[in-house]
Image 1 (tube, rainbow, N blue to C red):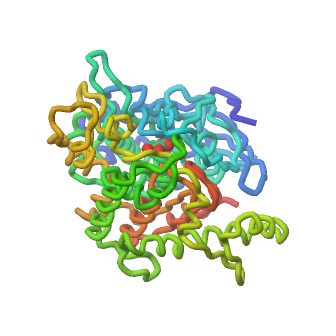
Image 2: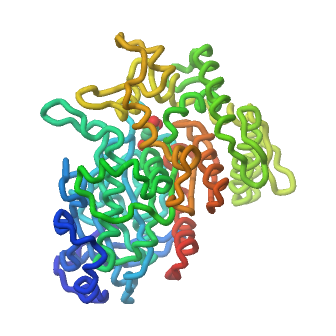
Image 3: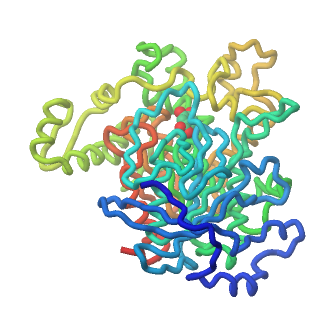
Length: 530
Ligand code: DHB
């Protein structure tokens, strides 16, 4: 198993790339800085890998692999600001033409850490990110059904599950682009942090621009870019979808010499997105405030928890979101009922329905809080919280009073490694800061990092209109309302939203990757290979 390079010969065959490349110079703006960004259709390696489908069938996929292409003209750090491209040319012995196929744009960011694909030896080999230190190991075992670990042996927050989407996409005949991106821990010799917000999203946008600038040279349909990412990578994927072509990022993109092209994407896949960070502390306490913390076995400071919960109630009211399927206005008061009705009970129902009669009976005997009637699971919110058990984080979960959270580092700037990004935590700072207020640049950084800004506050017409959102029902890395709000905001704008929870799964789970691949075919109008 794994990925085996069969030949390093750059023989062009199967795809009519050369003719297109020479006749399609018009797709770029011919700016001189952009000349460096012209994709060379011939500069690939021919590789073959074996992909196990979700049904257990094995497929031999031969693909052309372009490695470590720097996607900006003036990179800060090419190791991260580069991307890999994989284009299938032969699947199970049959030639395929991917020139009009959807493009899966799969980032491998974890923990808002740097992610590089530069050392990958094939598809799915990216991900130098290390997850969120101090956040504990992901509790959700990756449930990848495609084989082949990262080709360079790297894993990140989501381990082997990360490359599942890429491998299945390749075997379905799609083009796969894997961008690297700067991350929060990068520090130069002057002690400056150069990968903190908004570096990662700016990089991903620059990478999308590179792909679109190379329309006709790079195989695939640049109008059908579907982004994917998990956790912090899911947050960035959602942000990429929400903020397409937003002028907010322009100055950052031009500093890097990003290609002159649109950075809007067609569809968004986001697994357990750790987003809406400035409201996540309140949302977390609303959700998990009564659960003991994993690290201490005790409930967190209930005064802090309650104050944060009150902030969530205010925020949720201000969002003015309506629940899916005619639920009505979503508030802190009814959100438990909404999660149960819309997501959690259906999630348990799907899980239980798929079990054999005897396995179901055994599960129900162990989990007596669930009522199984007429093929449906029902249960009470408090019992569900007890079932999930210990919360992964202490309080506040994201803007820690002592600046110890990874997100504090994500909002670092210059030579300051970590900063507060909420007024509440700045006021309650325990590190001895002289000012107890957030820095003047923080509000702009928050807008740059939050998909909700682009969906609610300043609705972006250039956003992605198709959303695939997934979350483990036992994931306590953030509040369940974070992705449910994302889904409600997008659906409220008329976008198509497909959001499910995986029962009994923790952080980073990807239980239905085959469905995601089929969904891509459906929303892009591409005829999927069987
Ligand atoms: C990730 C996990 C977290 O708990 C978090 O706060 C940020 C990112 C991650 O796995 O990417």
